[in-house]
Amino acid sequence: MSTNKLHIIQVGDVLISPDIITEHFCCDLDHCKGQCCVEGDAGAPVTLDEIAAIEDTLDTVWNDMSATAQAVVDKQGVAYTDRDGELVTSIVNGKDCVFTCYDGNGCCLCSLERAHRNGKSSFMKPISCALYPIREKQFPGGLTGLNYDRWSVCKPAVEKGRQLGLPVYRFLQGPLTRRFGEEWYRELCEVAQAIIENS
Image (tube, rainbow, N blue to C red; front, side, top):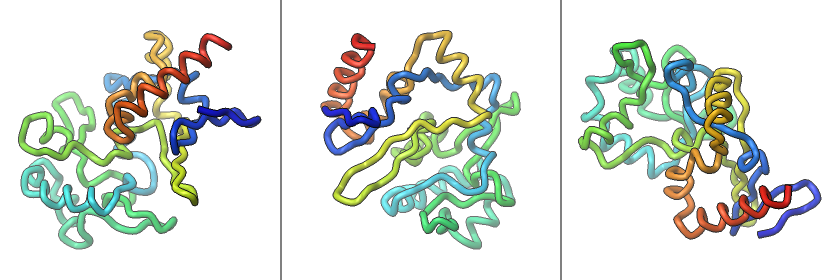
């Protein structure tokens, strides 16, 4: 672990914004209704491996998708290259992810994640979705950067996280472990504890 003058924390080959340790967060679907799946101007970043996994799962979630979403996937596939040159999930009308679905209370859900939770698929959802509000960026030399993304639609999540005293990195223990491994996450927790004790 090391910290430079800009207070960027390094754990292994991962550079971490200190906000991920010091800020609080806990998704509050009762208030936000899952807006992160329907707001914005591009889909969720995906890897080639994730695209293949989504394509393998497509038949399972097809009936949970809207007719418009099905038409988009028929035309361009489950992903496309956005204006920044990144592979992202396909979207409907420049907005909704094609894999959005809704519960009886009007809350937006991910059909991929729902299929996984119901034991119908081994693929959960893109890691970029699972890691939110952390955004991942790749740097030369094999380094990965993790930044905390502030978005107005997530204000209820920030408030709930503060009420619970739940830091971002603790809220995202599962996705961070899935992405970087248990040993890496344990080291992150040790680093975070040292920062908290010295603050």
